[in-house]
Amino acid sequence: MGWEGDEEVPPGSSTVEVTLTPDGDATVLHLVHRDLPPARGRGTWRDGSTSSRGSPRRRRDGTRGRTLVDVGSGVTVVWAVGRREESMGAPVVHFEIYGKDASKLQSFYADLFGWEIHADNPINYGVVHTNSGDRGIGGGITEGDARVNVVVDVDDLQKYLDKAVSMGGEVVTPVTEIPDMVTWAEFRDPAGNVIGISLADS
Image (cartoon, rainbow, N blue to C red; front, side, top):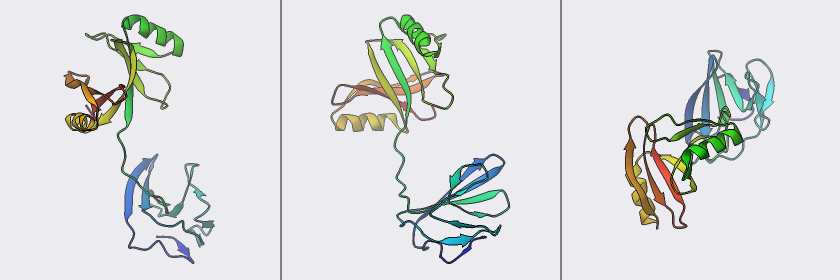
């Protein structure tokens, strides 16, 4: 594969996870070994240069990573050695701000933070675009008792409602579908906070 050195690739008995990621005109192949100790050593690249695995080599895109092999066919192999991979948790994807006068509240936050808010829908729900590029998340501003909550994406709304109840929470809003917008629900945690959950990809 283009790597020549005084050190073997980590033992085949370890678990290897492979991810292909688009990177401009190329494709990056990530090989992740679970539960391995940090590797040490120095080897020779196909181009004749040397690089230690302890000192990540700069990739063509200007970022740094443990790039061991450039196979010359648009695929770069990147190793992450000694890294423990955990299962991904449910992501926070949305925030909501409630108040008795939704229109006034929408204007307040639009003027305060420069948010773009669209409420041209039958329920006057102010969809918030924070205009912050790829930083942060979007949200909504709508009518209701004054509170702020977050919305978490899950794959099965009822399963998570049932789990929350079994852990001391209570259902606030059962599974509800808002056509052309979202399928969601809400629960109250043991401390009294209301948390929203939405169906992933809905």
